[in-house]
Image 1 (cartoon, helix red, strand yellow):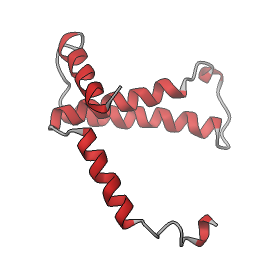
Image 2 (cartoon, rainbow, N blue to C red; image 1 turned 135 degrees about the vertical axis):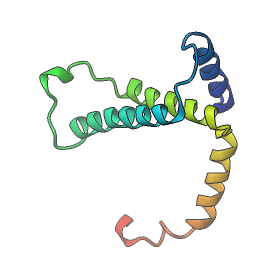
Image 3 (tube, rainbow, N blue to C red; image 1 turned 90 degrees about the vertical axis):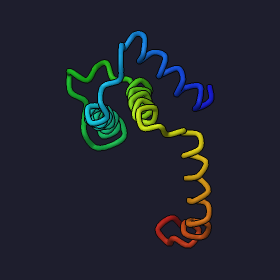
Image 4 (cartoon, rainbow, N blue to C red; image 1 turned 180 degrees about the vertical axis):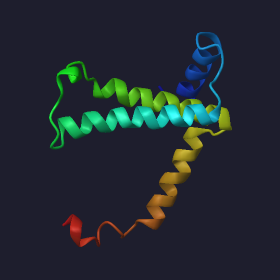
Length: 108
């Protein structure tokens, strides 16, 4: 699925099943909540924290998809074409960081 298709799919779901978008501020708060859920799993699965008994049903892929869903909602609400935004961002990074990481002693 292309990013544009994902934006259209989310929009269709929101405007039918979801009835309407939550406002941008609410969706920003939801995005932070979803990112926190990803961070919680990462800290337990790859970091030093241990899982709690209540963490038996963790699904990192599903939580990342939740982050993506809300991010797409915000992009749709604010008129951002994520394909265009990502392409421009990658160009910026490619120019700005052309030698930055190669010359970073911490990465060697």
